[in-house]
Image 1 (cartoon, rainbow, N blue to C red):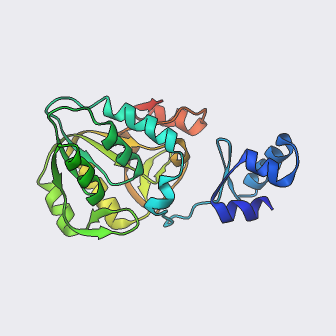
Image 2: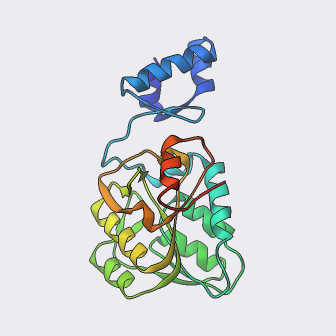
Length: 239
């Protein structure tokens, strides 16, 4: 029943499983530990989630309802690093969408590869530059040769990127073209911040974007052995 629920919902809370199974929290925790040891699911804070595949990617709609409060807190911290006259890049993605709402009312220039981000930025009267190219439906990101060419001609004071996976060595993402765009952004920014809630730590996707030493990580506070190892290789800012 646990596996059926996890595979159906992708992410299930401990409370929901306790209610569904009419049993104790400690029993469910033991079952989850056993299922994780058998590589059938992944434990996360407050519950469990289905296993991820290297090229698996959720849509914007699916991402937008997960860990919303954590993403908002990450966005607030990210916004605090922005200064007057900065030229910043804001990557596509749900956490970065929340970042736009938290941007300080300063004279800054914002470059983005997301149509929806650009609309929000213009509504807030920021000087906005949108990167062209083919639009990837699942993430709303401009990708391909046109996007790479435009990004390669620009420099950024700060870049704020989303990632699907952060392991001990690399930032990763499922799509080769989107990975190339993220890599180009990172190479053209003085300082890069990867915004990722704790569920991304320990995940590995198909495409290696860059070694983790190349960017700072803003994430949620969680006791995590892997995160402690990562702290030895790059700056980790935990909310």
